[in-house]
Image (cartoon, rainbow, N blue to C red; front, side, top):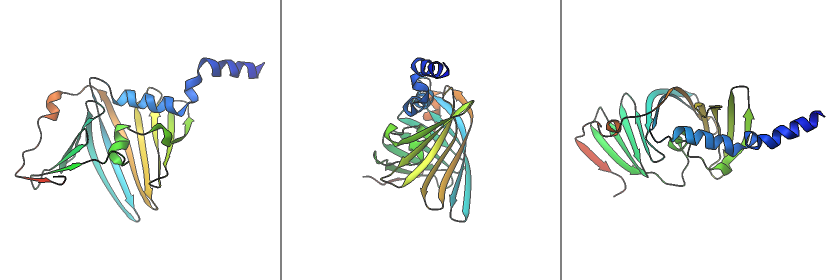
Length: 192
């Protein structure tokens, strides 16, 4: 009798245990038409060195992201990354390699579903675990059941890990935020 009950639940809610369901929930939460914004605390551990930075992230869609830190502002638009150094007033322009998986891919939730290996479902959140065998990367993304990310982790080598805490998640960004960028004195184009 009890097994029939669980079978009925599985038939009624088949996607709740599906790893792809929770990844899609994360993506739809991050890629809302009116955009989203949130704060992140990034802690990078490399061997015995630990560095931390806080940033404000604003995303308008799947291809446009603005990351504002104390010393620099990063604008990602499609496959182009523009880094504004506030101290030197330099703008560095580069391309993102589409097959490459890194910090920006993680923050945007732009992960290929084939990387997911397991979803641990808890009372109020889901932990998505992933492996990217071709790079030797592994990590996790914790999301609330409404799709809002809370933590992200990427292990990219032995004793090298990036941990991200996500706070103050809000829906809606101003288009003008992407236009009011720091003034520059020098432009360095790395992909010309």
